[in-house]
Length: 112
Image (cartoon, rainbow, N blue to C red; front, side, top):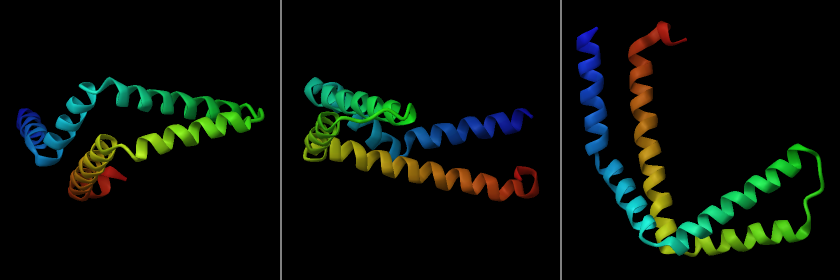
C-alpha cells in the first residue's frame, strides 16, 4: 500500500508542477491583486445563486434580477483577467479529466 501512496504523492506533485496548474495559480493570484474584478465575480455568483434559489422554490424571478445578472456577466466576459482565469480553469479541468480517465482505464472492472 505504501507504494500506491508514494505513486499518488508523485502524481499530485506532477499535477501541481504542470503548466496547467501553474497557469491557474498565477491567474488566481492576479485575481487576488485586483479586488474590483474579484468583487464582480463574487457579485455575479451571488446573483446567480439568488436566481437559482428563486427558481428552485418556484418563485418568480424579477426582470431586474435577470438584468443585473446579465450586466454582471457582461462585465466579466469583457474583462481580460476573467478570460485568462477561465481559460486556465478549462485547461486544468481538461488535464484532470484526462488523468482521471487514465486511472479509471487502468482500474477496469473494479471502477464500475
